[in-house]
Image (cartoon, rainbow, N blue to C red; front, side):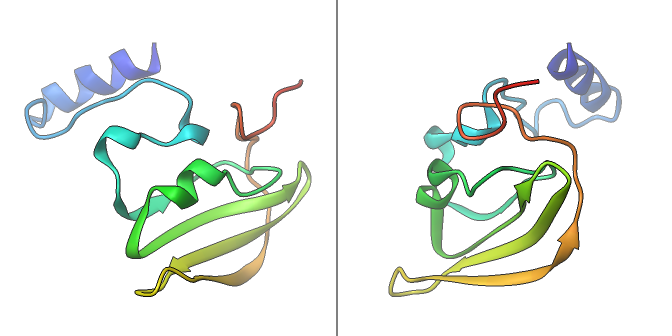
Length: 107
């Protein structure tokens, strides 16, 4: 339902041909369009989903909250030109739970 609402709203705003709405498990990313320069996850995960890291371009950034359901830290990962991942912790936060294969799977 959420994807259908997004498509309808984008069409109403005139963006229906410019933006592709994809339905699926966000914890697995979207391999067909990888690599990405930036990925922002707006839900808390118990750990960093590996597929998202693997889909980062050289110089790409991934920002997401990780940790327990009620105590998370906002993390920014950067893939350097030589492929090394640099982690930066930006502070404590609390987001809704990220659901999916690499997120929270229970209640």
